[in-house]
Image 1 (cartoon, rainbow, N blue to C red):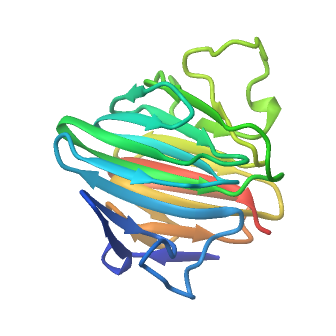
Image 2 (image 1 turned 135 degrees about the vertical axis):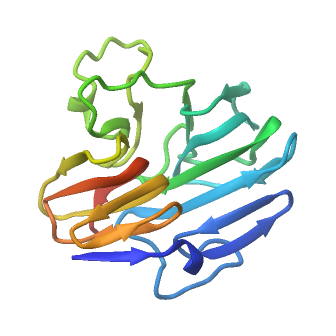
Length: 244
């Protein structure tokens, strides 16, 4: 079953300089019909003007993955050194036992980003930060894993950060990206008992008979496989989490 969330029906939250479009209840936007999806707590699309900042804290027991759609972001927190990421890059902070403050500051051209908040399988522990400035394009197309809590998704296990390797989630979950040329499709397969949530960043895709445009989201329940067909060049993000 596929449930569509249209961009014009999303919640809006203004927090200082940032405008957030929220797929689930978040901050001042409260919607009992859209609290979260499985172990996915929040999906927020944010835009920051040039040199503006978005600040949060304190937060604990949540993994916050930030993917940059356009521009650059510098991430600051009370626990870690600053990290800068550009278009197509990803930053992850696992707040674990607690992070007092964290913030994202846009560069001179501003920034648009998408944040996914994942609930970890186990609470507590030591906070961790990871960043990937960019990911290499997949030659065969399809979905690329940006973040994962499955050890088999990084089989080399070298002990060092390899360019393009997924960042590590504390949940048995995945965050994936696909850039689909017009007229082509991307297929994703998962296992029973999973909750899938897809966000169209750019372009247009069709899921079964439903057409989704920029900013639209889709909750996919009780489906172990789907194909996203691009009606025009499209970029999509997909979260795959435990349903409960």
